Length: 329
Image: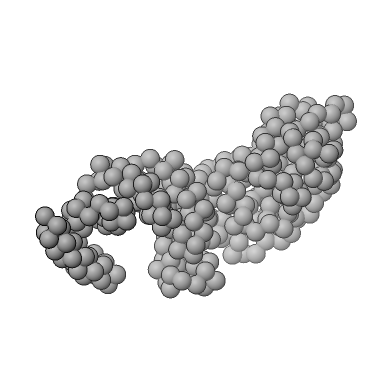
């Protein structure tokens, strides 16, 4: 979507994530992550799609420069919050602004007034007019035909593409084309619909599979923000806690889920593992038995090889626990 006037805050003055990626030489994945975690979000929404305003570009420029200068994310966020408050109060065109850093203060000059954005540190000095010229050049670049076709897909269509590509992934190599395609498609779904809880959950699971546990947690949290009762996100958050050795949090999370979904297989399985880790063998046995009963009640088509293998392993653990608990009794 091309803009005709960077000072105009109408939907027509909007920049796509690809425009912004080109302008600031930032990976689209980073921009999406900043958006999904609430750090820097596009402020324009038109027909279910999100776009960056020119004011958003100023915030992105400030964030990119300050992060590059070594500021912490928390300090950059405070500067951005102050800019968000101040920029709408400025009457003259945004292109006349100049943003700079003096010692530990982020300063905005309007030509008529000067104000401090927030406490910061680093070197920052750029003309908004220069940014405007650079944005115009980026938007003038020709777009490939497939890029235009991509923008016509709905959030659900992107979600479907992501699920199909995820099925083709081997589950291990983060550089595999199927993984990269799936991740990008989930990101695109969230571009189209930032409230798409299932996309947050699936993308979080992908990130967890390749070891990005912080990113996974952020996405599961976002899924629950959009859909507080979603069992998959609740289960995955508890599984993350278990993976990190935080057994108390895992136990609390799984129990909370089971109150709402008493037959949730993964919750019984995960809760049993967490209870075993803290010595709760009797309670773990009960949940392992519930897991096995639940698996046995599934239709054959619902039992993949991994689930069948786990069922066999759990049976051995149940037998061992029964012998141990029986002998102790």
